[in-house]
Image (cartoon, rainbow, N blue to C red; front, top):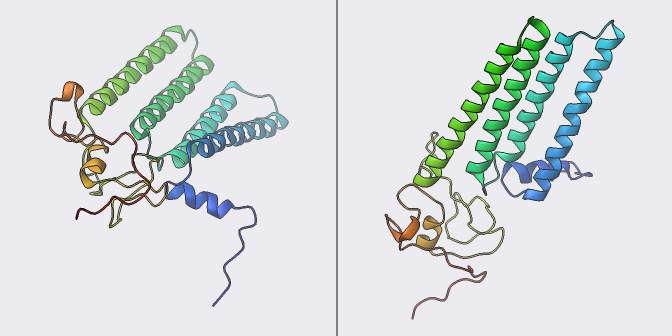
Length: 224
């Protein structure tokens, strides 16, 4: 049996922890800053090669900024899409960031390629602001309703309320990551599913299913 390759720098373990959702907020935040550095480094390298071949054109700067921004946004998605906690807020933030990057790229293009482009740039900015407002309003409505039980691919996303670890496929309502134990009704109520999430004032379906203030890390005692 061939020996498993050594993971001297821990890169494989790091990537595995991101894929399965075990990586925490601080790790992902640090990697996001590193991704920004990589995108900026690639941008400077592209501009440096372009400058060596002659005068640096505005169109080249625009294209380089668009590529760097898109690359950074893609890396951010890869880093954060498996992070269970604040999933809706992160998705909304990424969408707004994508709109902002696209608006900056389009406005830069208009400024570089079109004469008297003030109205075009203003239209781009106003459209981007309107789109961001729509995205935030849609996220607010979804947050009030709760998330769907089944995703578009048919899977059911079940996360530990304490640490956000994915509990899909487990045979028990105990988190193997942080050790917290839940009853099934506590675990379901904490997922924020539509029709199950507690409403303000206690109204609505599932309002009697409350998450315990401090889940125990030991298995619950069996009734006699």
